Length: 255
Image (cartoon, one colour):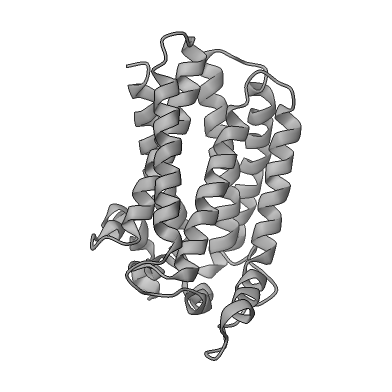
């Protein structure tokens, strides 16, 4: 179970934290500033966790580093969905925008969000620089790359856009998405993620690794596996949103 527990922990944290963020985002707008304030406090605590775990190569250090990085990631997710960290462009894409013009509008719609990711990523790199426990950096890096892949794919076009997850104040974002069966980039992304996940799982089961390395590789491998699953959710006719029905219930009274 030295691989199983980190994998199960990753799965549960991925599912539960996503639902919590959706639930908080669906509450009345008056609560959002308090949610953002609490998330910012959690961000500070999480960065402290990144720093503390950076020198800890016990299995508990792996759990702390992974959890702290996920909570840092959660801050920007909350900031984006609440509308505090998006971009200077807050209106729909013009219907006649094509090619690079459309891409430029899309970048401006999420520019502050992307800059926030750079700042947070740099902070984690600084806190873990030349330290023996790099799991926080690996975790944030995987999340960043997988989210970038997802953004590019919904921009180019996929079957399932899951626009129902967007709150009313971000409905204009849907105009930057494109709905079609798939796109040329999608298989490239899937192959790359599959290869990375396979490499991470292979590393996790290597017999020469210690307990910390096994846990760290298992966390990364499971995170990549979930990213692969999320990518397939974008093109397969599956009601993946049902996984977080409980997180969407907070929107019902305010619809």
